[in-house]
Image (tube, rainbow, N blue to C red):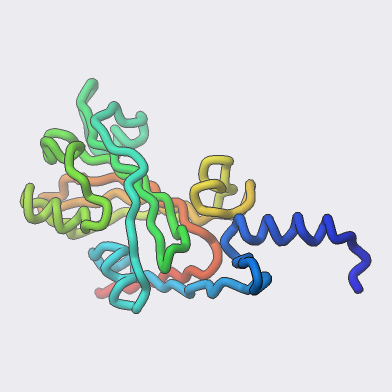
Amino acid sequence: MYGVSRVTVRQSLQRLAAAGLVKREHGRGTTLVPRPDVGLDLSLFRSVTDQLREAGHKGKVKMLQRGLTSAPPHVAEALQLKPREKAVLLRRLVLADDMPLSINTSWFPAKLVPGMQKVQLDDNSVWSYLADNYGLAVVSTKNTIEVIESGVAEAEALKVDYATPLIKLATCFHDKLDRPVEYSISLWRSTQLKFSFSQHL
């Protein structure tokens, strides 16, 4: 019908299955995988997983990396770190209904969150942990949004093709004393996702 070989069709279906768009089962054939439409309100100082769960999605977080490290120069400047001051690094994969949604890389001034690099925070809200254990509550943010292309690592983690457009959200979070307490870079899939903002004057 389409003038292509069976080999081409099989390879195409394999790529769709690898991206999580279709499911191939013996005896049942190939079926479409439902894709969740996800809406997030970035003006709410609440965790992504909490918003996902309240919207009826199965929100999950998988820890990819954590540790004590030297922050990149632009992150150290945003967090007002002195030379040789360390930061706690958390890199996590956020999933909605088992679909990879974003890769979130966050840095925190180590002096404000001693020992946090040792804590397992896979499915726990980082903001709740900051408030409960360090008395840090986020009250304001500075955001920058741009569109970039996925590299090999991002494409593999998010199950998208190489050079797929991603939404890059860079945010610096401040507490009530106007101290920068977190700098994060989130790389979001550019499909099945809607951001909303609200402002009160």
